[in-house]
Length: 188
Image 1: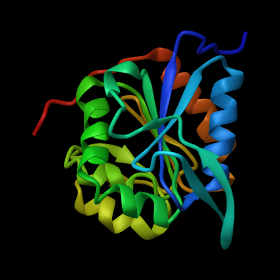
Image 2: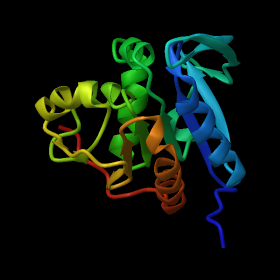
Image 3: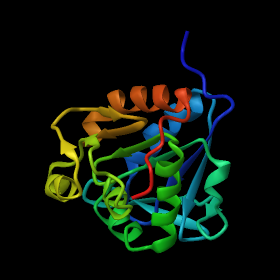
């Protein structure tokens, strides 16, 4: 029997420059498992996708970051792309939103460059993670045990390296979201 997420609402935090397949494919998998998903962004109407080496389609924002309440969400998806996480990591409200999930032990799935915003939370010490290779040093400097694997799970935090890993990423993300709250990390 397939894992069902029918009672779950998942936040997808993104802004302009997210890698398109790193949002669309995981979102589709979540919705096919029965989850409700909301794209949350500092922008209020639409965000523009990046497709490997060029701009792509615009996607509707469901909830502005100013209006989003992290208590309303059971899990968090952080797509990558070079531009998207770099913009989000400098947004104080975005960092606070993500920090809520870490403190509450709610599952988070981050792919490619997506973990960059997690670094800003200063809550990664001792975590085992993976990412796109170019941010390995940033994660190691944040206290992460970085490994080069297609998917890594550590107490509800699911990470993967790049779009090639999406099938494994989606499977583990859905599993972790179905399990719900994990042991929370104490604030540092």
